[in-house]
Image 1 (cartoon, one colour):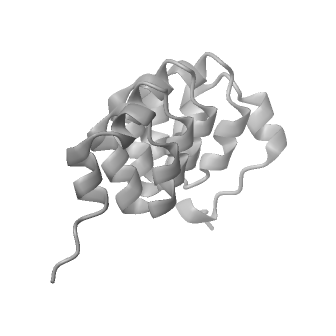
Image 2 (cartoon, rainbow, N blue to C red):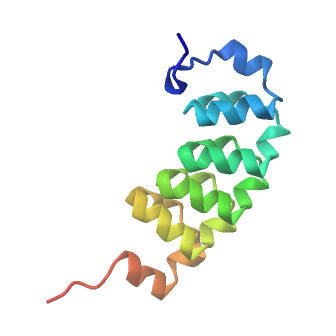
Image 3 (cartoon, rainbow, N blue to C red):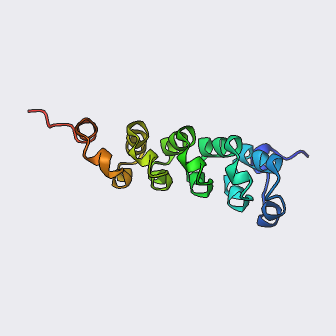
Length: 135
């Protein structure tokens, strides 16, 4: 009997043995086992294609991404769209990006605490986050 895709089991030992195997990691993402990326080599954590696929499914993976990818707008925007609080791990530059900040806050209001200071002082941004009450 053939295993269904969602029934595929991943073990920590397999993830460790395949830490530098992009095909293994991509298959794990397809099998909804993004947790295996916690065992990725540094080289794979710099791989934009791999990390982008992972954050589409689980924004939490941004935590493991390389510093360069934490400063990649496409990666960070994708991650915060499904896990707003992961905004905390975006680069300082991107924590000051209105589009990303709004997407993160829309997903999880608590992400507001990680917004860069310069954006906190932006009148337009504050009107979007705290609209004036209607009378």
